[in-house]
Image 1 (cartoon, rainbow, N blue to C red):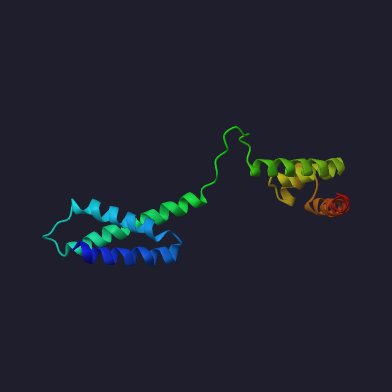
Image 2: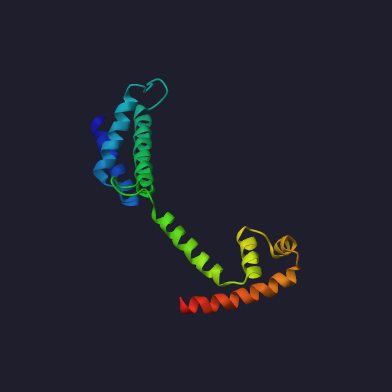
Length: 155
């Protein structure tokens, strides 16, 4: 029985290695571990034990593939001895600085409108908060866009 299972486990490991890019020997060892773990709970009265053992080997092999894929996609933790700041934090700080630099160039009304819009308000809601119409907000948005075009060309 071990000889028959050896051939099938080897071909299963090669098949999944070709499909997933994992190492075939690693997958073969995982398949054997799954098979050996299943030996103690196999019930000979239910049916063919080979099918049960192969199924458990395949499950173990596929779990290994899944864990390997998750490990490859997990974010890297901070390196010991370095600041815990991530690239995303750094990018966010740069974005905040650029936004502040641009907002400093705007007139007070335009700055108030931008702050309302950055807080997630619609033009109509921003107009209601600032005591003007949405058409007035649209006018100021055109002025803001023009100022942004000038600012981004010089920056």
